[in-house]
Image 1: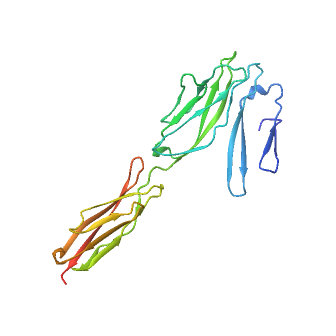
Image 2: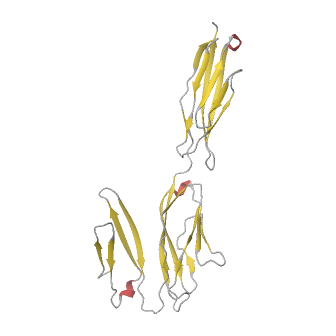
Image 3: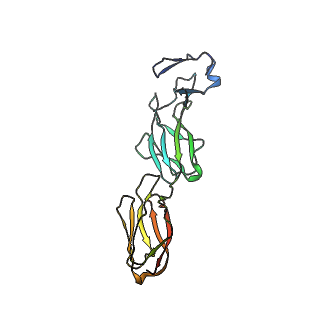
Length: 250
């Protein structure tokens, strides 16, 4: 904390930061003050930037920028707003935008639009600085942080296990082969290379049933029967189970 500043825990989930900058405090400006909250096992921290000036032109101040999550491969976008005490127009910038991110100034809007399409290589927590500069004399700037967590990209569905099977002609084969997706959607189930007379039916809720009434015309090896589960991610991913069924003579 800056010299002479204090912070008091109010004991009710709030705290009070107090500081009266002394003469000359503008020399070390801006000041970054970090605040940490903990429950005994986990902690979270936020930073605030304080600018001290001797100018009558006051720096812009940002409205709260809330923490957001985005999955790699998807996009996130939202408006960010700062206000200037003197009411002048503001110029927004960032000294270190991540690759794929941009700031868009739409005509007629006093806010700036932040847009980002992170990749799998950018998974993790990001504290992106943003600056608003007024048109005063001299110009003054205020800054804040855009907190974003990039989550891992789309993961292929998981599927029930299935193994090679041997039956005698005349047997009825009934196999449950379903799938689930850790990203939360319901996979689409399809089948390829089914034996003659066999069917695979999905209930559209992630469960499918392979059924086959065998007979003597089916005697032999039926290989590479394939069940495929495809999710609805961007891009969509698939998993599959491949198995054989051997039909023996009675």
